[in-house]
Length: 107
Image (tube, rainbow, N blue to C red):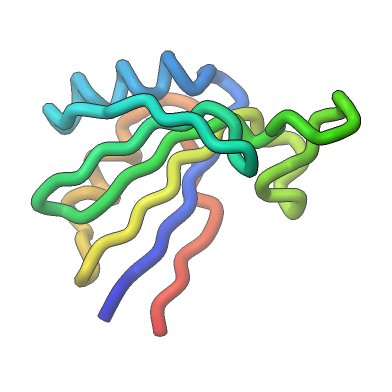
C-alpha cells in the first residue's frame, strides 16, 4: 500500500533542505532537471523515494507557476513515497526546524 507525504518549508531553499535531510537520514540525493518541474533532487532508499524541489517552478511565460498551488506560501517541497507507513521517518523529519507536514495520501 503506497503512501505519499508532502512536507513544505519557507525557511529553507531546496539546496539547504537537501543538506539537512542528507545529514539527518544519511541519504544521497541526485540533482535532476525537468521542463515540468525545473531543478529537483531525488533520493531512493530503504524507506522509498524522496524528492525535494522548489514550489515555484519556471513557467513558459517567464512567470513562476506553483507546483503545489494549494500551498502558495511554501517555497520548498519535500515529497515522499513509501511502500508502507513509515512513522520513524516522519518522526525524524519533524526534527527539521521550519519543515511542516502538508498532507498524507494513502489508497
